Length: 135
Image (tube, rainbow, N blue to C red; front, side, top):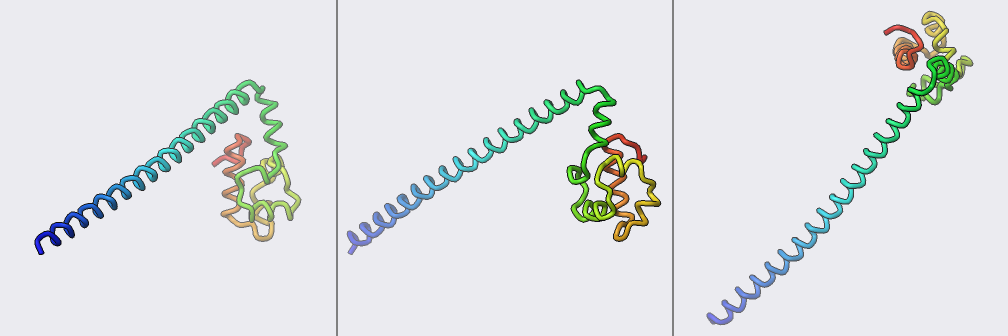
């Protein structure tokens, strides 16, 4: 009887070791996957920073009046305005940032479905591009 208990104990210990080894292998694979994802994310962040530096350097080389002209010709769909604000502006035939920079706030507020929140977004976009509409 003692031999069967000892054999059962050894079998249980072997099963635990086997399961432990399998768990360790799974943990190592998971860690490797996480490490690979972290490396990918770090590489993407580095590419983004390099692209941002390239854009910053390009903007520094452009004469200010050229840059201002390019920004004024920027279509509103290329700004960070919400889609619903863009649709409302397009419905009123306001298609470019230059139009937003030159139209009085009171005129914008007369547009149907265009309220203070929309006005605040427009002012922020125009301000971010240094085209006036003081904050």
